[in-house]
Structure formats: structure tokens, C-alpha cells
Length: 328
Image (cartoon, rainbow, N blue to C red):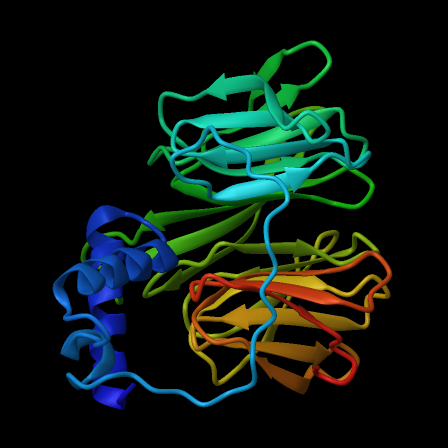
């Protein structure tokens, strides 16, 4: 992909994301689908690749894994979360959040939203599922799994793109994005991270930053004292002290960060980017210790419970498992 072609594609995605109020990743996906429909077989469009010649790439073979189970019910899926006992999976997409019995592969309960579902997250005790809404005045709904009771938290000022519980369940974090005020110093969006007390439903605005386009990254440190977020597409990661509200910014030279995850021992932060890479940061120094190249736009990362394996998923339609200690 040439530099000019890559920049044109990214510019088109940013414009589409702003116009449709969708995520940057979703905008890229739609542009790729459009280009695939209009390009000759075996070629990329000039907007996507910068030249009308067959795309070629030399690299190691990728392991092919088959899916043992396919759960059918959504037309699109934006978020998933496992219950702590591993027997139930929650999924969120289009206008529903669904609970699945992993053993029977059947949906047991469906929650329907009039405004669309953008993210789901189980509480650490598994008793509550937080469901975020795509509505411009976004809301977060707490779904009591045992009783079916729904509790809506106070409306936010923008579309809620992500939710995450602290390890002890005492804090629920949400990230929302709203258009910047007209006539302001910069165009784009304002991303606000809020901390909620799930028991009282009271929020605290922790961080609000204006960027060209907002991010949706939220990840708690295993200690529960620090929250990682990506408020924009500038490649930076923000580490928030959830007690003091003080923020530390880790800058980077990569494009927008799509996802982040802490290692179980809390020493490493993995971040995935739209440039197809995963960066492993040493939190003691704040420096990048290693870079993994997935290919495609890496939209999700997560560590295994023992910390030995890192899983990543990408728009190249693969999931890769990394022995990240030696980058294999």
C-alpha cells in the first residue's frame, strides 16, 4: 500500500465516521467493503491501495483454526463478554444484547434496545451486565441477570462507545464521544471518560479531551487503581488514577489505538493500532518493549489468565495467538 493510498483511505474513513457518527474502525470496514465490490478480482482500488495492480505480500504461513461453535442471532456484533463462570456469553450488536448458554449454544435471554447496543460488560461477580447505547445522548443500562431488572444510569452527553468494570466491581467506567462545539478551536469530537458507582448510579467526569476523532479504549489495571483509555486517534494512551483523577499520557508514533489490555501481573500494557501492529509497553518505563505485526487493523487484544498468551483480532479476518514474551 502506498503512502498516498493509505492516507486517502484514512481520510475517507475519518470523513465517514464524522458524517455517520460511527467508529473509525466501522468506517474503515465500510470503505473496504465498498472497494471490494468495485475493484476487479485480485486487485485493490486506487483509493485503498494507491495503485491498480495485484497486491502481493511475503510472510510466514498463518495457522488456520476452525470454529467449533457458531452462535447465530445477530446481524452484526460489536462487543462480547464472558460471565466469570465461563458458562454464559453476552453479546451486543445492532439493537440487542443476548445471553448465550455456551453448552447448548442457544440464546437464553434477549434484551432489545430502541437505540442500538454498542458495548456490553459483565460485572466481576457475574450478577450484572452493563449495556451501552449508541444513542447520541447515550445511556448505560445495568441489567440484573437474576431478576431481569433494568437500571438506567444518568444520560451522558454523547454516544457511549465502551464500558468496563474495575476488578472489584466497585467502579464502572464508560467512554462517550460527542461532536465538538461549533466555532471551537478545533473540529472533531470530545471524548469523556466517566466513573460510575454502580450502587448509587452517580457519575464523576474524570477526563474530557478534544480530538479529531474519539477513541473507545477502556481497560482497568489488575490493581483497579488505574484506567487506560484512548481519547482520540492520535496514538496516545491515557492512564487515569481513579482516586485522584490525575492523568498520565503515554505518547506514541502510531495511528489511532483501537484496543488495550493489561497483563495479569500488571507490568505490561498491550495496545493495538490501525497500522496493523500491537505494541507492548513496559509500564515501569513507559517505553515500548516489543512490537508485534498482525496485519490488517487490529481491533482487539486480550491476555490469557496465566499471562503467557496474547490474543489479537484484526480486519484481515484472523485471530492470532502470540507467545508474546518472544514475539512468536
